[in-house]
Length: 419
Ligand SMILES: [Fe+2]
Image 1 (cartoon, protein in one colour):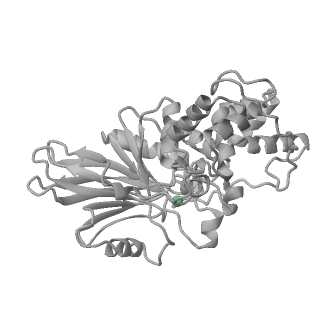
Image 2: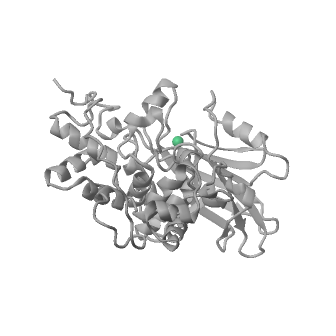
Image 3: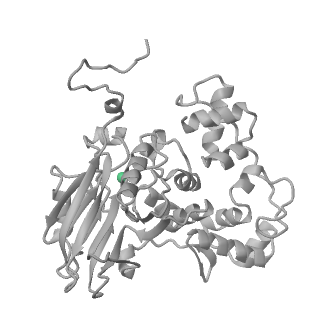
């Protein structure tokens, strides 16, 4: 059942917008839009469907600790967004403010404002203090590689590493193929894989041109949706970089470390199987169990457009790296392509996507390689070099293929169409 259908069912069951937001993790604006469409007797997806009038701005009067007693009068949707912490966030978004000014504005104690700021920071919101007071860090996010490798993986006894590699799932998009991600994780489980690297774009984010592509609206809603729907398999942990596009749009606009924010959303769902690798490009140490010699694996969400040839973007990316900075293995997302090869001694895999071709990609004449893969590396214990690399690419076809629409031996089965 689509998210829209679920919202309609809950509306018909008499649930309030706040209850639906809490239950489905979708955006409140979207719920209002579906409700307005239902009330007007229009299909909710119809462009221009009326939106319920905005509730009047509450006169905010917070009197107690974060998440505790709040005077009646604050609408449920404000509380559902996180109470005082969200009010503080809204207050410092425009310009910084001191603790005292915030306390006065929000009618809360300075201690509670401090706790709310700490809570925001813990979620990944980049609050910092300057001479002007507390505000959002306006500086762009720095790529994770600047801080060196944060994760270390030790080889198996036979000097091998096996791990899954996928990315560009775009959860929250209508074109996301969650069943493909589930199928990939089934394969990982069959192969006894414990580690999966995700090359970014795990959510679709929001920009002007994907407005009509989304099932889930809002940063928090998309992260919670991801945490609820991303495959969970016993013993498998996913290590994910954040792209500077899609989920990264939130980082650019909202002053949020979106990788950390998503990791926190998983934790809130009781999940410790999702680990944030950082922004854009993360080095990972591949350490030999017997000798301690090591190589670097790079998990990257690059930028720029696709090229005329599958290998070309990877060739240029590796060509751009200085001597001595090249990793032994590079996993790359962004282009939605499946490809593997060896460029200037770097083993490379492009990790595909779990999103069908979008209207944007169709306009740009870009093919979507729906799938992912897994790798088995052999490390030389004497030097730490990765001397062998086996890549298995898994390709999934469009939905028509699975409905037996395209048959190699029988008649073509056309999809049912409206009369
Ligand atoms: Fe992507």
